[in-house]
Image 1 (cartoon, protein in one colour):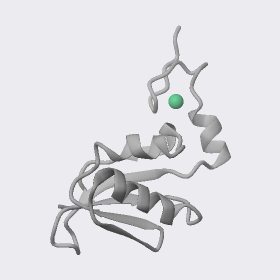
Image 2 (tube, protein in one colour):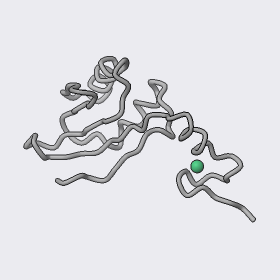
Image 3 (cartoon, helix red, strand yellow):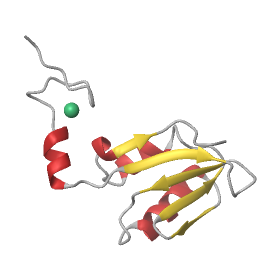
Image 4 (tube, protein in one colour):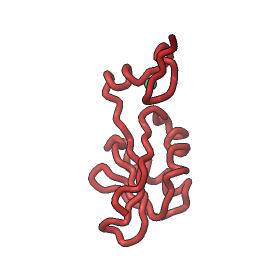
Length: 106
Ligand SMILES: [Zn+2]
Protein backbone atom coordinates (compact mmCIF):
# COMPACT_ATOMS: atom_id res chain seq x y z
CA UNK A 1 0.00 0.00 0.00
CA UNK A 2 1.57 3.24 -1.12
CA UNK A 3 1.22 6.16 1.20
CA UNK A 4 1.30 9.41 -0.73
CA UNK A 5 1.95 12.71 0.98
CA UNK A 6 -0.91 15.05 0.19
CA UNK A 7 1.39 18.03 0.54
CA UNK A 8 4.10 17.26 -2.01
CA UNK A 9 2.64 14.22 -3.80
CA UNK A 10 5.68 12.04 -3.12
CA UNK A 11 5.69 8.62 -1.50
CA UNK A 12 5.76 9.09 2.25
CA UNK A 13 9.09 7.23 2.34
CA UNK A 14 10.64 9.88 0.11
CA UNK A 15 8.74 12.88 1.41
CA UNK A 16 10.64 15.42 3.48
CA UNK A 17 7.68 17.61 4.45
CA UNK A 18 7.59 16.40 8.05
CA UNK A 19 11.33 16.88 8.45
CA UNK A 20 11.08 20.36 7.01
CA UNK A 21 8.16 21.15 9.29
CA UNK A 22 10.15 19.95 12.28
CA UNK A 23 13.12 22.03 11.27
CA UNK A 24 10.83 25.00 11.01
CA UNK A 25 11.76 25.85 7.46
CA UNK A 26 10.31 29.24 6.68
CA UNK A 27 7.38 29.10 4.35
CA UNK A 28 7.65 31.54 1.51
CA UNK A 29 4.29 32.69 0.23
CA UNK A 30 3.84 34.22 -3.20
CA UNK A 31 0.59 35.87 -4.23
CA UNK A 32 -0.75 38.81 -6.15
CA UNK A 33 -2.97 41.55 -4.80
CA UNK A 34 -4.32 44.95 -5.72
CA UNK A 35 -5.30 45.87 -2.22
CA UNK A 36 -3.62 49.00 -0.91
CA UNK A 37 -1.49 49.30 -4.05
CA UNK A 38 -4.07 50.16 -6.73
CA UNK A 39 -1.99 48.35 -9.33
CA UNK A 40 -1.46 44.61 -9.41
CA UNK A 41 1.59 43.66 -7.38
CA UNK A 42 3.18 40.36 -6.42
CA UNK A 43 3.86 39.84 -2.72
CA UNK A 44 6.61 37.54 -1.47
CA UNK A 45 6.36 36.82 2.24
CA UNK A 46 8.60 34.79 4.50
CA UNK A 47 12.06 35.65 3.18
CA UNK A 48 14.63 35.73 5.96
CA UNK A 49 15.44 39.31 6.96
CA UNK A 50 19.15 38.61 6.47
CA UNK A 51 18.55 37.80 2.81
CA UNK A 52 15.64 40.01 1.94
CA UNK A 53 17.63 42.89 0.44
CA UNK A 54 19.70 40.67 -1.82
CA UNK A 55 16.67 38.58 -2.76
CA UNK A 56 14.69 41.70 -3.65
CA UNK A 57 17.54 42.93 -5.85
CA UNK A 58 17.77 39.58 -7.63
CA UNK A 59 14.03 39.37 -8.20
CA UNK A 60 13.88 42.90 -9.60
CA UNK A 61 16.83 42.16 -11.85
CA UNK A 62 15.60 38.77 -13.08
CA UNK A 63 12.02 39.89 -13.56
CA UNK A 64 12.95 43.35 -14.85
CA UNK A 65 10.40 45.05 -12.66
CA UNK A 66 10.24 47.62 -9.90
CA UNK A 67 9.88 46.60 -6.30
CA UNK A 68 10.81 47.10 -2.69
CA UNK A 69 11.12 45.26 0.58
CA UNK A 70 9.27 46.37 3.67
CA UNK A 71 8.94 44.70 7.05
CA UNK A 72 9.86 41.27 5.73
CA UNK A 73 7.63 41.49 2.70
CA UNK A 74 8.82 41.91 -0.88
CA UNK A 75 6.49 43.88 -3.14
CA UNK A 76 7.05 43.58 -6.89
CA UNK A 77 5.16 45.49 -9.54
CA UNK A 78 3.09 43.29 -11.85
CA UNK A 79 2.20 39.62 -11.76
CA UNK A 80 5.30 37.45 -11.45
CA UNK A 81 3.82 34.55 -9.50
CA UNK A 82 4.78 31.99 -12.13
CA UNK A 83 8.37 33.13 -12.49
CA UNK A 84 9.34 33.82 -8.90
CA UNK A 85 9.65 30.19 -7.71
CA UNK A 86 12.35 29.48 -10.32
CA UNK A 87 14.26 32.62 -9.35
CA UNK A 88 14.07 31.72 -5.65
CA UNK A 89 15.23 28.18 -6.38
CA UNK A 90 18.20 29.56 -8.30
CA UNK A 91 19.02 31.64 -5.22
CA UNK A 92 19.11 28.48 -3.11
CA UNK A 93 15.68 28.51 -1.51
CA UNK A 94 14.13 25.09 -1.02
CA UNK A 95 11.33 24.35 -3.48
CA UNK A 96 9.43 22.72 -0.60
CA UNK A 97 9.36 26.01 1.26
CA UNK A 98 7.86 27.97 -1.63
CA UNK A 99 4.10 28.23 -1.83
CA UNK A 100 2.29 30.03 -4.63
CA UNK A 101 -1.20 31.07 -3.60
CA UNK A 102 -4.08 32.14 -5.71
CA UNK A 103 -4.90 35.78 -5.70
CA UNK A 104 -5.77 37.21 -2.32
CA UNK A 105 -8.55 39.71 -2.32
CA UNK A 106 -8.14 41.26 -5.68
ZN1 LIG B 1 5.44 15.57 1.48
